[in-house]
Amino acid sequence: MNGAESLVHTLLKSGVDTCFCNPGTSEMHFVAALDRIPGMRCVLGLFEGVVTGAADGYARAAGKPAATLLHCGPGLANGLANLHNARRASTPIVNIVGDQATYHRPNDPPLTADTEGWARGVSGWVRTAMDVKTVGGDAAAAVQAAQATPGQIATLILPSDTSWNEGGVVAEPLPRLPTPLAAPNQVEEAARALRSGDGEAVVLLIGCGGLSERGLELAHRIQAASGCRVMADTAGKVPRGQGRFAPGGVPYVVDAAVQAMAPTRHVILCAAKKPVTFFAYPGKPTTSIPEGAELHVLARKEQDPIDALERLADALNAPKVAAPDHGPRPEVGRGALTPESFASTVGALLPEGAIVVNEAITYGRGLGPFTRAAAPHDQMSPSGGAIGGGMPLAVGAAVGAPGRRVVNLQADGSAMYTVQSLWTQGREQLDVTTVILSNRKYQILLGELANVGANPGRTALEMMDLGNPDLNWARMAEGMGVEGARAETADAFADLFAASLARKGPFLIELVV
Ligand SMILES: Cc1ncc(C[n+]2csc(CCOP(=O)(O)OP(=O)(O)O)c2C)c(N)n1
Image 1 (tube, protein in one colour):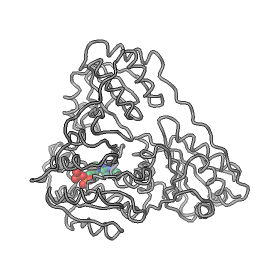
Image 2 (cartoon, protein in one colour):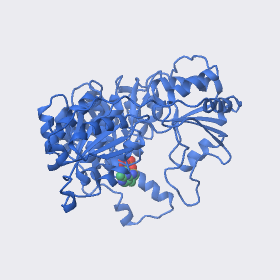
Image 3 (spheres, helix red, strand yellow):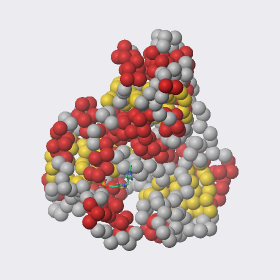
Image 4 (spheres, protein in one colour):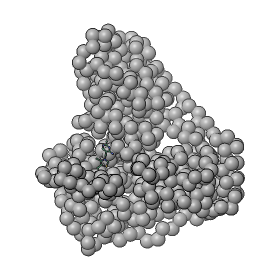
């Protein structure tokens, strides 16, 4: 058995059975091993940003890591932005990065790079396999590391000779590392803040795995018992829709965030970080939390947030509460096409169990209120602010959750970063409806430019204009094996959207807004 074969066998034994790939010469033995050993689903992405973003979406949807196969430092580098998004979502991913043979690296051939260094910026665990005999053990350790709470990226670099040499040893899966529990004083301190009677002045900010269905139920009970405000921090996947408690997030715009948090005297962090603004702006604060507000850590990210919320609810004697009723489903938006009528149609037609991948940026601003009373579904979005995550997330979610419709609400500028995702959707016949919100602009940046008081001239405006030439989305989709159509009115959108949800396979709607 060679090293590559021991790697594939070990990954499979450890429960990793899906690999998003973009291989090169140094990975040919791994590729050949995938051919000989049945059981690994291999999904080709035509750019590494698709590969890494898809691995992120897969793990969020499937609840277990996928592997990626990337080529040398440059292949990894092409995938870094979406690995950054995955890191911010605490997504478990096992990267396999093929590299120069150990004895050839000192010759400095063209694709040689600081692969370990580039991996380190996004990975919680990095190792270069140096001997064929350890490759299996290294792979098992990578899977174990990826799944440590709350989830992280593990990158195993595989010099080509460790892959092709004979002497590979398949490793047994390593046990899941135990998740530490919050200490008693963490729960007591949070309970004390909640009992202080301040109600609205206490914010319970929940992130990561704390925003699971169970976590939301507990948060609802805690809110009902204490009158606190519950808010959502970054999480890989958030259950939403009728019957689910629906906390809002801290607003993106600094002034709005400051206003929203103004009454706050206590912030209780549950697998979340103290809120800071996305960016600094001259003369503006960098956190929305008022000065003097106290921070309490109910659970650090590596601690079990659900256990902590259970114990907090118990400490407060918080009684069970009925599932929230968000009222009737929104209606299909007819008449004028606006962010609200668009959002209303999405909320009206979303099928139960759908996965919404939201990279709608400015045109998605109306979505929140309209998805609350929609059929129960899950939402995810690129978590690190690196645009171009949405379409790959949709690919990965569709592979990771077969049978569920994925609805990708997708701003056009961000879509162009990883447009090759459509080809993978076409090839794999993934159940994805992509809605391109075609404003032919970097709209959000026009707003940011206005915020800094600039009076934009032609050069500035041209840097935010995606027209001239206009992108033809339906034709691009068709060129990659995905049927597509254009809608220019709310009614046409509603009809196309409904039809796309009733079919199998991918479909793209360009909504001209
Ligand atoms: C990787 C990366 N590159 C650049 C940016 C800066 N950026 C933020 S939003 C944006 C434009 C978004 O335009 P679009 O996706 O069309 O959405 P719209 O603002 O029009 O709604 C850019 C370039 C970023 N956040 N991430």
